[in-house]
Length: 222
Image (cartoon, rainbow, N blue to C red; front, side):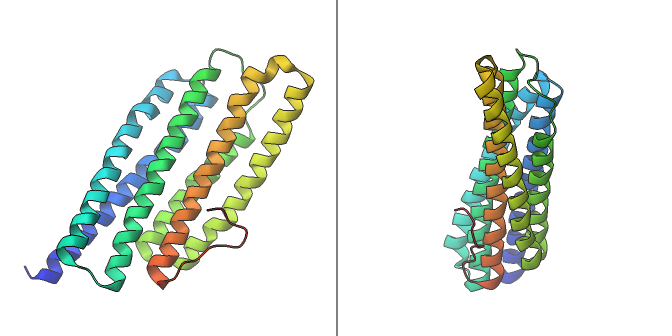
């Protein structure tokens, strides 16, 4: 097997590992909010446990990238792919951590009846999952147009976060006894908004990988 074919296989294996990590964190987002909706402690604890596997995958991806850069001395496009892969893994790891944070807040809320029916938080979770999925598809197909579509979804998430924040702030101002039930919901909304931010980071990294230039959407976050 010649050198280039070996390297191509190594790059394909790295891509598969990144996609595996992406599928895992999409599952963690879903499970964390389901644990809240259903007051399911077992599911929340599953999220907390599975996040360790995500952390391990990030370490493996980082090690692989460092080895490939050192051993293969890749040129422009392959080097951008490797650096992008490492950055995507970092964002996916943070999404896993935020999903774990949501699961922990869900456990915290299980000692109380829910303050209000959950409508906007599940919507935020769905958009966040979709954003990660679209970003991963863009990564697979090197599709910058698809990557940039993630940015519009981030704006939807921001609007929902603002609505939740306004509603919960109003509830707390009228009834101070609601704080213990409202604050964790407020944190969950913020965690979901941060997940969307990380999906946007991934989309921006894909644009860099394909186009070779740094792309920051107007009004975007870091």
